[in-house]
Each structure stands twice: as C-alpha cells, then as structure tokens.
Image (tube, rainbow, N blue to C red; front, top):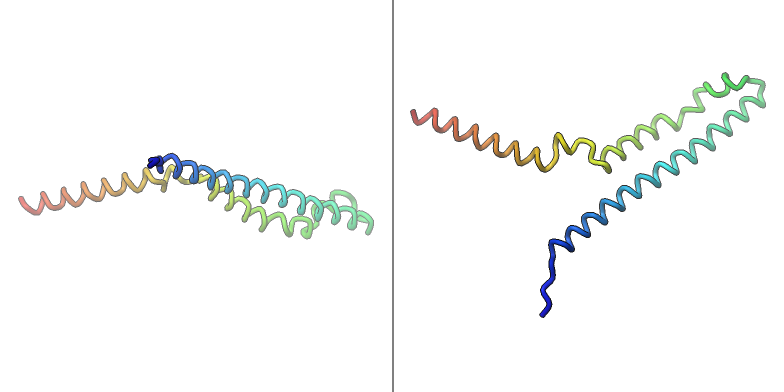
Length: 114
C-alpha cells in the first residue's frame, strides 16, 4: 500500500488556489482597462464631435463614471488577493494575540492569588 504525503498535496492545492486567485485578479484588471479605455475613448470622440476641446471632453464627469467605482472594487479585489494586510491580521497575528491573552490571564490570576 502506497503512503501519500498529504502535506505536499495540501500545499500544492493551496498554492494552486492562490495562483488561480491572482490570475483572476489580473483578468479583472485587463477587463477593467479594456472596458474603461473603450468607454473613455468613445466618450472623447463623441464629445469632441459635439465641439468640445480635448481637455473639456477628457474632464467630462461621464468619462470617469465607471473608472472610479469599478477602480475601488478592483483595489479591494487586489487587497484581498495579495493579502496586503496579512502582516497585521494574518496567521502570525492570531498566534501573537492568543499568547498575549494567555499571558494576561496568567498574570491576572497570579495577582489575585497574592
């Protein structure tokens, strides 16, 4: 009977899941740039055909209507995928917090016994 190394298999599956998430973010970024680029260029052409200068057409609020909210969503997606705050609230944080709470409880118990 063959013994499997589940830890390597689990590591591979976790890494694959992470790579898929990163690939998903990059696709989100590409779609974001293509769609918003198309909308912006279309708006510029339309506004300039209506007699606006390039600057007036570029700074039209409808030009940025999809960039801003979708961009906020893209940033949030990136924060989640690249685990930006893991150094604050990651696995290490949990372990440090548990140790801190255990030490606090032990110190409180020792001070009550005195």
